[in-house]
Image 1: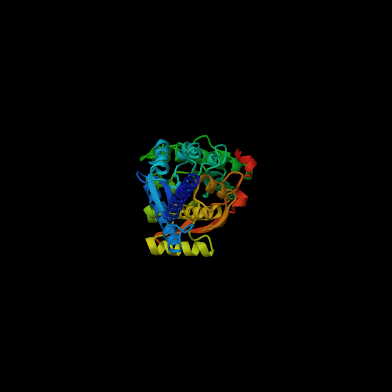
Image 2: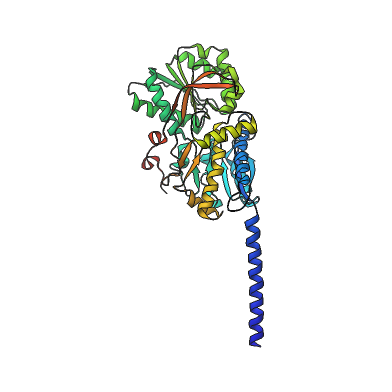
Length: 408
C-alpha cells in the first residue's frame, strides 16, 4: 500500500512538473507586451502619432534581431486624451486586461502629475518619454516612475543661458495655463536671475487655457506690454495656431527676443513649414541633426526610410524607451514588473542622444536640451533648419538629487 501511494505521488509530481514546464515554455514563447499611453486625439494628436512611429520602428528592429529574452515584442496603445483620469483608466486596462509587461508614454505634465502615484499600485514600471514637469522625478518620485526625456528644469536652464547672453532685459511669457506653462516660467525666471541678476521678470504675463483656439487677446496684451524678450511654452496645435495668428498681427515684427521652449518639435515644424518665422529661438528635447553617433545616424536613416520624414523628439523618446526596456529586461533576466523597475535604476544604455543613464537617486536621465535659431527651409524634410545650435550637456543643466525633492 505504501509503495503504491508513493508511486502515485511520484506520477502526480512528474505530471505537475510537466504541466509547469509546459507553462514555462509557453510563457517563454509568448510575446512581451509594452503598453503605451499618448495623446491620440485633439490638437496634440500628432505627438501620439510620432511616438507610435518611433515605438514601432524600435520593436521591428529588435524583433528582426531575435527579440528580448528569446521572445518577440508587441505593443498596445491607448489615448490619454490629455486627461489624467482617462490616462489612469488606460494604464489599468493595459495592465489588468491586456497584461502588458511595462508602460511608457505620457505627453502632458498635468497628466504625469495625475498618474504618478497610481503607477506603484500597478506594480509595473512607467518610462515617461515626453511630459516634462520636474515633479514626477522630484517630490512625486517613486520606485516605478522613470523619465528619459528632458524635463522643464533642464530645458529652462539652457534657455536662461541663451536669454542672458541675448541682451534682452525685460522678459514675459505666453504659456498654457497648467503645470507645463507655469513651471516653465517659474524655472526660467529662477535660472535667468542667477545668470543675470539685472533681468526683469514682468508681471504682465499670458496663460491661455490648453486647447484654446483664439490667441489674439493674449498676443495683443503682450505686445502692449513692450517686453524685450518673450518665453513661449505653447505646444502642439496651440503653438501652430499661435504662430499663424501672431504672424497676422505683426508679433514677429516687433523688436523682441522670442524663445519657443519646444518650438523645434518636428510635429510643429511639419505643420507650419515656412510659416515658422526665421530668426526666433526654438528649443527641443532632441534634434535629429545634433548628435553624431552611430545609434543616432542609424535611427534617423531608418526613420526617414520608413516614414519619409525627420524624427521628432517624441518619436525619439518612444524609440529610446523600447530599447531601455530591452536592456532592463535582459539585465533582470525577466519581465517581472518590480524586477524590471529595479533594473532600470542606475542603468545606462545607448540612445540616439548617446549613452544615457537613469539616475538612481531620482530616475531622471542626465540629458540636456537643444536650442537653435529657426533657419532656412530644410529641402530634404520640408521643415525649418536650425542655426546657431546649442546642445546642452545634461550634467550642466540637471539639479543635484538633493535639490529635486525626490526621496527614494
